[in-house]
Image (cartoon, rainbow, N blue to C red; front, top):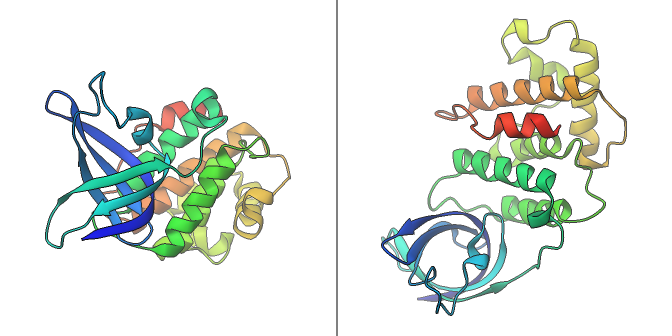
Length: 227
């Protein structure tokens, strides 16, 4: 059955000599895997640029119930990136987002509100106005509301963490977290990089508590160097 939908590329695996299996989080039918044949050959009609992580697509797909791998009938860019692929800070944040999304959503998972949030956030990351200094922190905090474990406030957040995570910077970290919860990317108060790195570590522990098998984030060292 053919279905029209928007999609966000999560990632892909090479398949055989010139094909790929691409994971796409679609708005209407959730996270799906699609085989794209001969896309890595020099004569390919469908270019690999369409399937880079976080690419926003307009799609027409074949969707058959009970199948694990589907096919794409038509794919075109929904948004052409201007800054994201060419800016190492934005690219680092994008890789972090892809890795954490892979840990948070599973095959067939569908959530219109989450899709709309991510679609808007990715376009924000590609804009000159993006507040890169707090972007990954705001992303993690806002994502919790779509995954079902959003903290109501900083106190509730730290009550769920191991007691020794609060540390001597507890008051300032609580101030930063409150800004992220209430203002998101619109927060404009400046905080030291060391404090933001501590906040990142606390947020990842929070995710590990709430999501089974969340585990280690391999892109974290790169992200920490950019904060």
